[in-house]
Length: 81
Image (cartoon, rainbow, N blue to C red; front, side, top):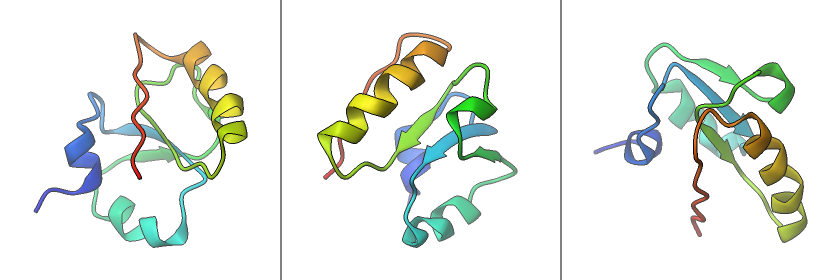
């Protein structure tokens, strides 16, 4: 069975930004082949793939422009419920 990250298909799965991931997501990240996991937007000058766990619209309003400003190319936002 494909992992969540495989389903999302990051173009550069070696460097990903993951914000506010719950502890329950740790096993998913551990299953990935060699990756550099970044947990702060500031740690990447350019962002190729970001996954943000948010609980409110306010958090989306905070993270989205910061990620977009560093995005390597046109980005899309996917909401998973």
